[in-house]
Length: 433
Image 1: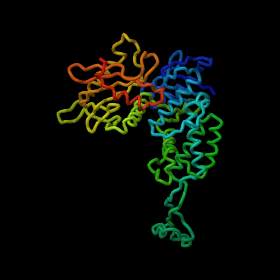
Image 2: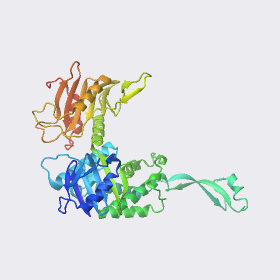
Image 3: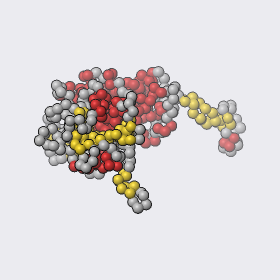
């Protein structure tokens, strides 16, 4: 099994060395990546299939094909760490971001430091899911009363009069019965069985394979349903089975639209991919919501939806959806637009690498939402010769609106909410120009 790990926007050259990838493996992985919905119209949104190597883009996760796999991790810095230790820390932080952004309750503490360094993101998620599912099954599968129909020698439940006097009219010794039966063959368990079956085909770690075999045996009597036919809308979670909510969220992640099975040559391929710009945005929105929980401010993610233009008959054109609106009552007091890219560190660059289009967009937001404080938020990195927070604040010409550029260190998990709150508490006219 050929396994390679690279960081987003890095290139891995073709070849047989440990830091290269054989051309045949690159062909298979690129074919699977091109089938992902995140690959875009040209098929290069996940990987650029170049003449000398494969180049990752702003998508992270795992791509696997017959006999080979590639893991793409985000560029998150951990000072003082390198090699496998740094990769392990990145995986741990990425799982934390995924769990928070997708509303998963994941106890990453059950994975040891060595496992973070040795296992891929996919194997770690399989381990978290399979261990939790084994514990839940040992306590008992959820069961529900389901209406069933059967032809029995004695009456059970109620009689299906129509069937009795039509199809069974010549068989008076059999009664068409309709009754409720307590059964584990319900939508929730069918989803769990589908997840176990899917993961059994892609797991490579021996412990994961063992747990999945045990689970496959436990779910042997549950009906097998194709993933596309699973009835997620039939799942009922109440106080009797609320402990399955976390497992349902994990199954949704592993079976959902970001997890595709495609065909790559003669073998099966799969991908578990996340767009870092969207993940960073959702992560910041949820962490900021927690940071402002006990204040008079609230966070609205992808809200607003005001239109830039109107037609003569008052129909809106060019709808806006700012990443994050910070509101006090109905008033928008701050608009935050997250950017998963590295801000320029050169002190002789007053623009700091901020694109002109981003500035125009923020100016439009300020006008439409009557907001005086606009913030572009980037991930912090070591090349910036100053601490995280607001780096620059510029007054917009002809009005009292301020455009800020700020950074937050995603790799530093301690007091993240407090540090994010400090950025929102900053006054744009307090010493920065």
